[in-house]
Length: 451
Ligand SMILES: [Mg+2]
Image (cartoon, rainbow, N blue to C red):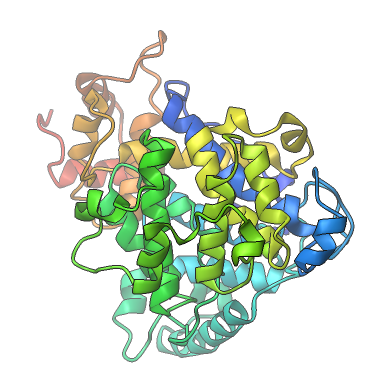
């Protein structure tokens, strides 16, 4: 299992030990698209970093053509900013918690803000005003938790279980003011649809919940819900025409549940981004989420079937260049797949191997989800895992899943069968601490044949 560092370790992403997914993980087309989406986000972020805040007039005369360093943040070429750091915080939470834990997501964003957790430099050197306010408010509210649970230090408070936090009187994890319609949630979105790609309903609902932690305005929430649906449809093989169809929402209505999308998002779905003149016809790479969403979709629509062209379209709009391109890269990467991202950019991308590994774990763990509503995979391993869905917490489930998948009972490389797994448990002594959850599973009768 990929282990993410403790914030005090001060490990940079390229210093984190890479643990690969098990050997029987099939890195198929969907996996390549998932890797493409997360790497596409980081590539877009890095591509725009040197010219962030530059107006469009500047980029007309000084267009970005490839990955370049210096400029706004003085970063080396290929280093990325807050967009990718926050996406990695979100991915690390989904993987470590094996599911959606909003408290843990906020804790990890706070670690990034305070300690540079999963940043490319060891410091949080850029943060949007809305996100800063939400994270500061979150840290303030945590003081009540620290007192209520007699925590000895901040880390103990950070590690509180979600159910403890949720039953604390008057504690609200969501720390955004309702007017926050910036693009700070959309820029970090991808890990949610990548992890829940088998469950569009859950993915889209979770995308909205995750956005609202820092950006609670309905436009920001619904932009994330719509974009999560687009990413999932791209992963599952929709054509570009299908993705950009004005009937996309109607065609996928059962993915969205009861909650409709904000009118401003619906206007975009109707095709407001299809402007041949781009900037000259009003497309703007600004921080307002509706502008960002429209600009990213325009960049994708006008890309002449090239990831590279689309990413440069996004950056050269100017203004919030890195974020427009990070949003574009999430969808374009999911649509085109990792192999279509320019090699030269991949070679320069900071912590490339770490990003790929994180994405592969999102795919691997996404396959194991037992609550999918529209499964892509139907394999024997699902049956094994469906027996574990009575675990009391996501962590128990996560440990059990990893325990099952760490078996290497078949040297040929196929997924272990039900019987192999059962044999393993019944023949093992079950004395190791590591087998705690196995024992729990046994004690709770998750396995059919007690020895
Ligand atoms: Mg940024």
